[in-house]
Structures are given as C-alpha cells and as structure tokens.
Length: 126
Image (cartoon, rainbow, N blue to C red; front, side, top):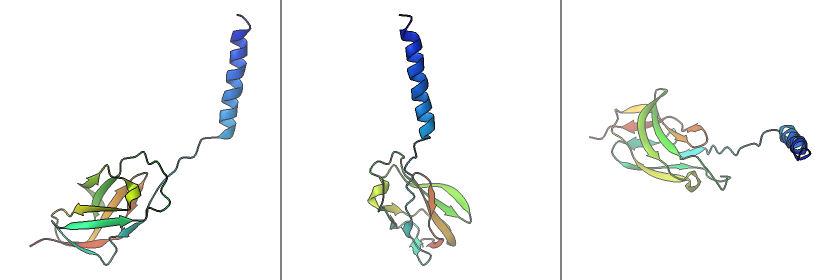
C-alpha cells in the first residue's frame, strides 16, 4: 500500500509535465467574411432581406450560438436581428427593423468573434 501512493504521485507529475510541455490546445476560430450587405446595399425597414457570408472553411462543430446585431454610427444597438442560427449555412433572411434613414448601418455577425459588414444604407419605410 505504501508503494501505490508515491507511484501515483510520480505518474501524475509526469502527465502534468507532458501537458504543460505540449502547451494549450488551439481552438478553431471561425470569422466568416460578410458578403452581403455591401457598401452599395440599400435596405428598407420592415422588409425581408438576406444576409450572406462566406461559410467555406467552417469547422465541422461550432459550439457558440450565432447572433446578428445592428450597428450605426459606431454604436451597436440592442436590436437582435437573429440568434441561435447555424453559421455554416452562409445566409440568413431577416426582417429589417424600423429605423431612421441612414448610411452608416452595419450588421454584426457574432459566432466565435464579431465580424462587421461594410457600412450600408437603410431607408425608413413610408
């Protein structure tokens, strides 16, 4: 019995040393570039629009729930346009919220990290 305890300590020490020597395991980070909307895009509030992004190279397992937000003038608004969708699909149809007409809108695609679209225009619905 006395021999088992020191042996387990030695084995534990070597396993811990091996893990530290190998370093941390890198995580897959997927930051898909947004392909639409572009700088030339004009959306009208209260209409259905499709957001697209390049999903090629997506890891097979994405653990984070995706989130899509609206941003204007450098400020991300509390408008959650969509949540808990699969980033591997490469597109998502949303309803544009009612907002004032402006040319500095962006969508922010969150998954592993935030990715901003170019600034584009949203026009207020009549």
